[in-house]
Image 1 (cartoon, rainbow, N blue to C red):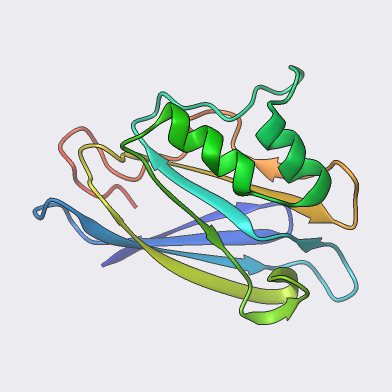
Image 2: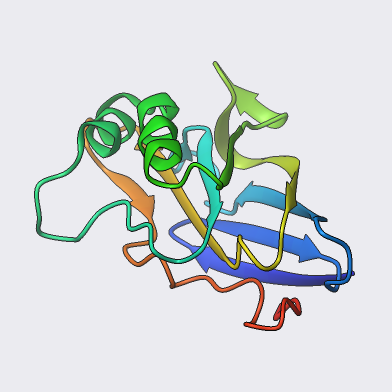
Length: 160
């Protein structure tokens, strides 16, 4: 198993996966809030695995209702529903803080949580995510391009 870490605004996403060979492989996504004490928190993360054609948002353009709900209230449900409507063969879920959590799974500084997803390397080559920055009323983070985070190459090999 190899691991890839993606660093972002005050946090890290660690993705561990196995080499292709089976139809599906387990991918563990771990979210850690690396912000210093008394800094910002992060709401539960929406996680999505897809073929690269899904693009949750474009910076500077109007947000979808799902991105707006995520950015304003930290609720990933509509964001993930929009994803599944666009990518019915996709894999998605919500990652909540289980260590250092506050409220409904919020990642306080130092908090972390993990979830294992079963993905098909041929169908789910790319990873997208979204989360609200706490406290705020409309700041969020996520990847602006559906192909920004490639997990598997065209042969289905993990590229971590």
